[in-house]
Image (cartoon, rainbow, N blue to C red; front, side, top):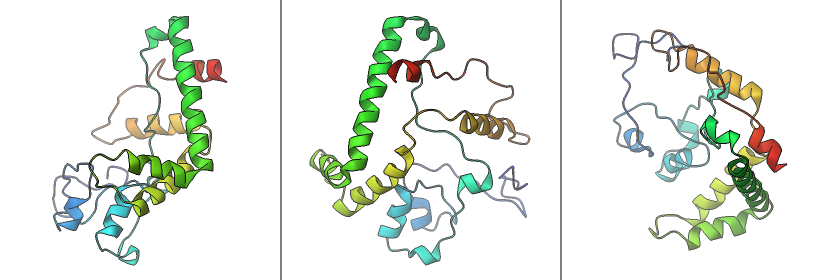
Length: 183
């Protein structure tokens, strides 16, 4: 909202911000007019709940210049001095990327594995297959941290107007050390 110059205190010309969980209940229950979703999950919860895609307006963070990194391997910098630790993390990354590569090549089988292990019974075949298609798009780059994406994230977090998430440029916040050891 800061990038758009909108106040978040509910004042005229601004918006009221509510804390959103990992679901889309606020929009479905008409408690919010806008919610944050991921293309691989919550967006489809809205569609499955009966709203038509034509009724929705999507604002992609990437298009707005405020996309930030999310999933990744996060370790304490001091642990990178331990060769055994780096080796263990490198083996984990290699195995993870091999698994994602298999899932991209076998999306239906990957969705079936999730369904077979869903103890809640809440997942559906249709939802898991859609999620797999969307996640495949996210893992296609092979998993190596893009330094441009990192820099954009830092800039976004620092440019939060009167309420930035971080106030100074991080030092030692990223490395390709584990990736380089893995590949």
